Length: 380
Image (cartoon, rainbow, N blue to C red; front, side, top):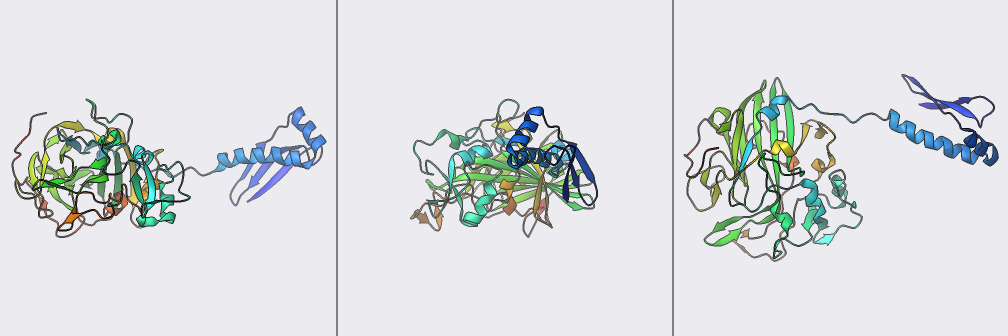
């Protein structure tokens, strides 16, 4: 690449600028006003260089390559899940940037020196060089704050299923080739309220990521994954409750674990969903949330581990290796290894986006029917 100045009347009255690359020659006119020309003649080379630099900055913006943009198939939206939030759940979906606004990145309960400020979804990945997986986005008030700050409660969807202007969903599409496509729908909540066991509460944490994944073959949905705590369940698309084409997912009260039916769910044995047991989640048709109305969308290439946005969306946050909430408090008491307050979760990149099966691990059973009838529901 070579820059060439051309003009008349001497070296200091440059009137055009040529950029020569290996394939093209670009020419721009640089008209000099009489005032600018006077400054150049009177002040010499320094003024001329300042004038030239200002044009070069503008030109760099013109010739800079545009950011790659991903294309999201329309069927990813046509079949996107609708989420029934529990009627009594105080902890609604939240805005991703708001979570950053209410937290400070820490390692070992010490604020990171030199962290980006302000912290945004476009620079969050810079924390990987300042603590990597040891970074926790630590709430200003603390996980045990009382009274709880309002932002813990998230945003209640309106009558259209929208959470105001917040963005609480990330859609990530993985194309495996030969018409096989996985569409992940990630849902974010500022706070997770844990389970009650024999009157004791376990598993509260700041930040909560849950997801569904729909596997498509040539644009037709085949099966859907429901994330539930450390495991989950998979069902054929035909087995699911739907509104038109769009399947319903039921969000657990406080825990936000994702289920295929309303009612009571025991998850004592990971991946096994029974109507009663020791560890219970509760779902019902409380408030309907349409995550696609407040979503960023991306594609993901497992071979290069690269995320590409479908529009003018921030991307860097997806590469963040740390946790989206506080670390478990030092000395937190536990019973059989379970504590009331636990560490926040890591993000979507850690949810086996390159999975071969519908499930993230084996064995993977895709059920063609619902396991049990809903015990509490109401019609739409």
